[in-house]
Length: 219
Image (cartoon, rainbow, N blue to C red; front, top):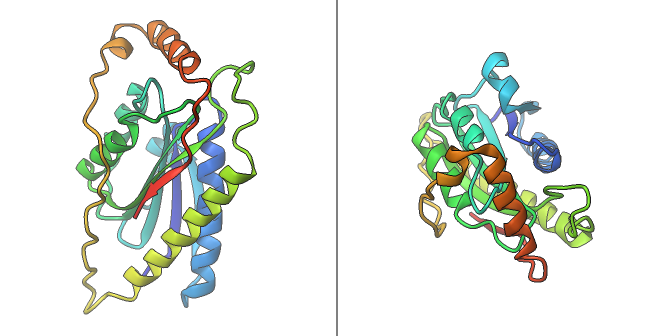
């Protein structure tokens, strides 16, 4: 039985946190109206989660959100994720990006989270304010982006309801793997210098000004 929804985010610029907080709240409210027991929810910065130790187990739905840097998830976020134990919790993996592509970041997060014992049932990539204050992308996320987040939340809620109804004698059916394309990227620039990574991210943004990919998700 699902009793809590926990949002975990690594969000230096705040954009990823807003997405995770919104989806965590909306999902908990929807599940609360469906399930017999009250569904609690809370969001944590991943830096805080290591110390506060939110209750992650098979009674929790976990939403993990990270920003995309140069088509990858940031090295500090990977290190924090490796400190967590998923304990089989049903989990949604999300990345936020501000350029034309999220690269291999979603596949990377999916792979690392599965490695840490999280059971991924959904994944998505959404637009967020990303990078410098004078970014050319300040008009995003727009109403279409917000509607996409709401649609994803409804879809993942329906899937969770199906899974919660498939328990037999306390055994939960294992969800099928998600078909996310990608490969594990190499973090050479990030390992060399945080400043070099920042310059590379700025160059990456400027090279992808015109074409903007729409939000995508996998269930």
